[in-house]
Image (cartoon, rainbow, N blue to C red; front, side):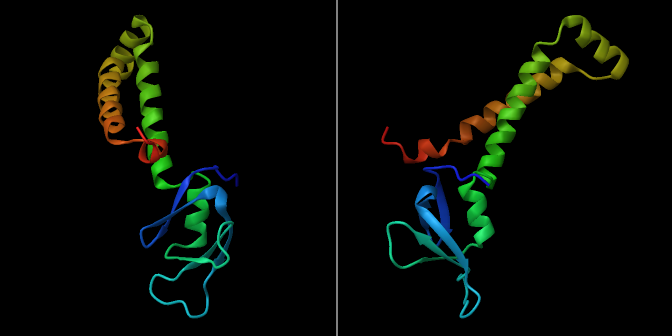
Length: 132
């Protein structure tokens, strides 16, 4: 699993840490109370940070495999599919509609609408932490 550098990783309790500063994860097994799931070792601290998330969830976020990344990937796939459907030659679109009851133009419109609505709501992590 490759860690995405500079990615802000949610540890729980309203705390975030940069993925490239996290050097170790240790699941808490003894004395594990409510919300005490993982000790997170970071390069800039001697003592670990206690996280309320599991080590696997934190690792997934460090590697960019969390829900935010998957939804951004889905939005990109929807936009790419809409573009491909729009670029089909007219004869293929007519054949698909007549022979397969598949309206490529209607689907391209729907996918563009979904993609544009999602891209207005979703930003990147860089947007969240930029100065401008």
